[in-house]
Length: 407
Image (tube, rainbow, N blue to C red; front, side, top):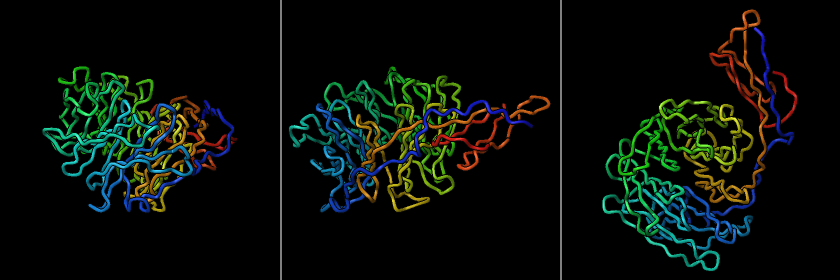
């Protein structure tokens, strides 16, 4: 056989990417508590804030939402705290200067915090909204039109309940539901919902143009069949997922045809260690993922069929399997900084250097017949970046550092 190298595409000659520590806030010192998820918020003057889910340990140390000023990112400061019940689950999203917080605590309801007084005032109006027919929920997503998608409530199958937030941000109005399967998390844009069904092991694509009558368009299993979250790229063509299991993958899919969803790549960090990916997000052709025990990873997804890890930072002293370390990451600040909620270590602020990967792609074919050769292992020596050719002989791999390598 012969190896036909079609492309070794290098767009950057930068040195190895790393992420640098900027600052940290110890919540065991501040509130004697572990953390769950977090989100970010930027006020009208461009000041950035971390919105942190605090677990709590009981009446003397309640759980709740902590608002942290990042005006000095090297020294994060809590400026507001709204208490709530003890729970190891809190999920936060923001729409129209309001933060919405779910929890699986009994009678937790939906906590709503008005962030619009910032930065002039740290006295933030907040309340707990109680639905008439559920009292606990797992997570939420809010689309660009102010529609809230609530997941895993103790109603029906725990599917998706849809609410309109535009009438009164403190009083959600139910407009429909998709309750065919339990839903753990979702992403929505326009008329389409991408829902992660963790116990069923797949994601679904749902037409929600009429939320009162959603239409299931298609489903697709994820690599480890424990689908935790979904996130769409800006083109709307590619979806990225995580499976919350040991040694699981971040998956990439072409979802342009919901009835013929194609998996185009899968990648995992700290390969073979047992580390569990948790939440993944897409930004500017990068996929940023929080990993329990591994911290945070950055994949270059310029070519979704060939994701390459170009950055990582381990926030935790733990390693391998287990639910310790980085719960969530928020990558959407204009400053480019990342904030991570590490369960035990607290709020971590990182400065990333985003660089582009170097890609090696090609086809393995028979030298005599020119027929493609499937199942061939192609390895970039040194970094040991490896791929196995498909039935059509094609392979795709890469590395974060430009250079000359033997293959």
